[in-house]
Each structure stands twice: as structure tokens, then as C-alpha cells.
Image (cartoon, rainbow, N blue to C red; front, side, top):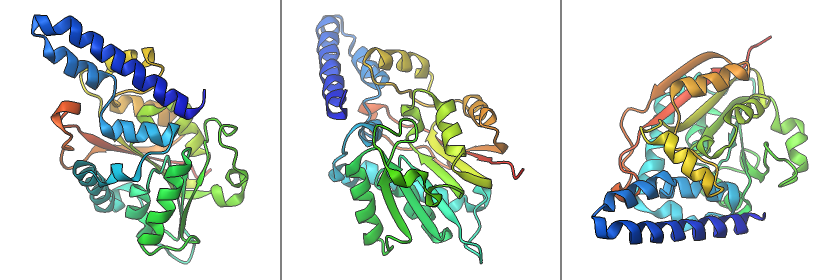
Amino acid sequence: MYPIAIIITTICSTILIIITMVHLTKSRGQWGNITRLITSMDLSLVCFSQRLTYASNAPPALFRWPWIIELCNQISKELRANIDWIGIKPPSSRPTKLLDYACGDGVASRALAPFMSTVRGMDIASGMVEQYNKMALKAGYTSTKMRAIQADLIDPELTPSPEIDTPGFFDFDVVVMCMALHHIEDPDNMILQLSKRLRPGGILLIIDWVVSSAGSSAQTENRTLGAISRMGFQESEVKSSYDTAGLEDWAWKLTSAPSQVPREIGGEQQLFLARGRKPCS
């Protein structure tokens, strides 16, 4: 199914279910069920923006919404405040490379670019790649320093790109995946594929939501809509994926403050940073 068809099917199914819930619960005064349903189906706009990153072309205007701007600023500040914890060192005589996978418009890339010689983004959506490259130029970076390509490491045939098999897209010092892992059906495989892009001693960094108490039921209901996603992760889950990929030097930490998400689409959420290192031998 083409990406736009997936989105239309998901939206129509969602609307139908919500209308049904309204009809069934209105007379009983159970409006809280509707809120829980919307939350459980992962209709927060942050999640929706990442879904579009994987399935279509997210509108640039999305990143101008005040609370999304605040969230992006929070992520940027957390990344820069944790440079030492992540294990990133300023560029030295040896060129340093960053891969930002599911890069969106490049929030993580721009935050970490000052510490890298070269930054590359990958996204399945051509619209996001275009937006990423525009934002990189706006930030003062040349395409030699920072640029993105359309590519999918899980299903390379979906968006064929000859560049993903070239040396320029391997042996990264840091690979980061920001706010996208919760849309992946098989996190173990995703983390394994990302680890293959690291040089020996390179670092894999994941930023995503900590699972809420409703996370497991949310994932089940999302599967009924054909939109594989989850509301977040427990530390043990992410660590298990890192272990499966053969990464070491595991570390996990929460951001210094919760993220302020509109109440009607989930309310306050907590972000985590997870780090692991590819063995040197």
C-alpha cells in the first residue's frame, strides 16, 4: 500500500472509531473514554509528525506550532547539555561523522552539528529530506557538511537509494534516532541495522518517550488500525535491543524536565536518552 493510502486509511478508521465511541459513551457520561481512546491510538501531533516522516510528507508548518517548537528546543538543549554523557568529542584531526536516521527536519542534526565534521540524514519521506536540507542551509551549513537523502534501512527497496551502500553512509562516529523508534514494528532489528552503520567504537543514541501505564494497551489498539506504534519504552526493553545488537557501554537517563504536550493529546510526557557503543573488536 502506498504511503498516502496508508495515511488515508488510518485517518478514516480513526474517525470512524471515535464517532462510534462518542455515540456509545455520550449518554453514559464517559467522555474520559474518548480521551483515552485518542491517546491510545497515538494521535498526538508529535507522534503524527513522526508517522508522516515514515509514511508521507509532513507539512513544514507542523514545525512552527508553538508546543512543537518548544519540544524541539527542549531536545536540542538536552542533547547539547549531555555531550560528555553521550561520549561525543569535538572534531579533531580525524573527521567525525553523524548519521541522523528518521531525521525529520533535522532537530538532532542541528543540535550536534557543531561537534561533527560531517552530518548525514536519512528519512523515508522526500518532503522531510527537502525540509532537512533547507533547514541545514538556513543554519549556515553547506551540503558537504550536512545533507539528507531519502532512504529506508528496514526496507531499502521501498525508497531505493544507491548512496546508502557507499562508504559515506557507513563508519559513523554517532548514529542518532530521535522520536521515531516507537513507530518501528521490530525495534531489535531497527537497532541492529543502525549499529551496522557505526564504526568500531561508535555510539548509538536513541531519544524517545518513556512508556506510560497505558502503553501496552495502546500498542494493541494501534495494531488494529494497521499503524504499528507504541507509546514508549521501558529501560529494560531498549537495553535488550542494544544487547541483541551486540552494543556495550549501556547508559540510560531521563531528560531534566518532562515535555509539555497538550492535555487533549496525552498531556505531560517524559523523554529518555539511551546510549550504547559498538565494540572496538
